Figure 1 (cartoon, rainbow, N blue to C red):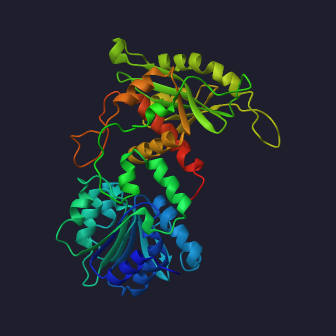
Figure 2 (figure 1 turned 30 degrees about the horizontal axis):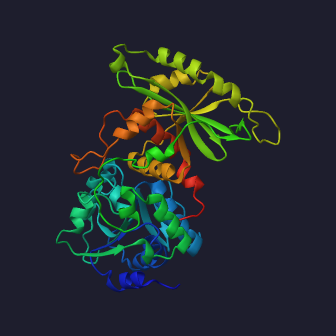
Figure 3 (figure 1 turned 135 degrees about the vertical axis):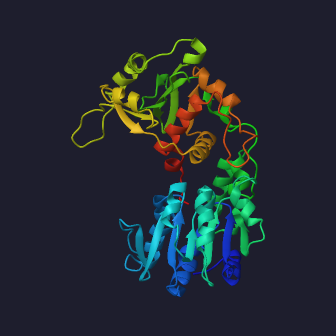
Length: 416
């Protein structure tokens, strides 16, 4: 294995209690840990405490760290996660835990940890990290971790700037081993967003102004045409942000030539209208609104070797809208899909999708355009970075759609 200069420096200096690599995406932070750091630390453990690997969730840790480790070191040396959250790595019992929720604190409460590894630390619950600090208590305990930078007000940035025994490295994207064309593509897709400073330059930058400053470039006058004819859709999806007194927002998306178009919207605000609608009212309205698209949808071939056409439209909705979901499941056109409601990741993926032109908005979707023009980061939010929660219902249903369908991730021409 050939190491970059930054990776070599880390191995020479990572003898502190806390050892953290921060910086750009794809800069080789996790790769070094998969190849060298984690195996070296685990083999050196003396059995005086637990070995624990933390990720945002168990699933992200599996995807980011454990699967690549198995590909390099084999399934015999890096096992599978068991039902009790343990895994055998190089013959030693390790614990694998999610750190995104403070409820996970109980899993390490009262234990002594000899070695801890942390993936995507800025996505963790602070309560989990605070508990970890008190558990890392043998004389030779070590922590290795990585993260992309976040807001300069983030709790983990404050810890890194403290007087603790920390060795810290900052990576920029050019420090890594990504091919030059991939680096250029990443720079293009994050240009003009808060994520450029964080994921390209490795800076802890403040989110200010519009959440989607590129939104106007996504607005189009109509659906795509070829030779004077409408390019047919190959798929339809509905996204819903459910509200009663708050606005109810839904978008109808059609995929044409590989691009998703928000071709129409349903939007109703009980607060603005002064009349609140029931679940049944909304369900009836959606029936009328969606029927033309459903007729077209049922003409689309499934691609199955058995032939046939589509039956139900995937309908993405926040799983907390339980009563309305019960109604939707009775509709002949509706296949309910629970939305991925990860706010930070959803916003980032939506920004990428808009920037890359993977998602387009018809000009007739006026509520969407109005909301995007006023969708700004909250300057009063110091600990947790978030948009101002005013007039954001179409923004939410769009985020559900992009994140759940993984629009940005699926359409990248490269892998990170």
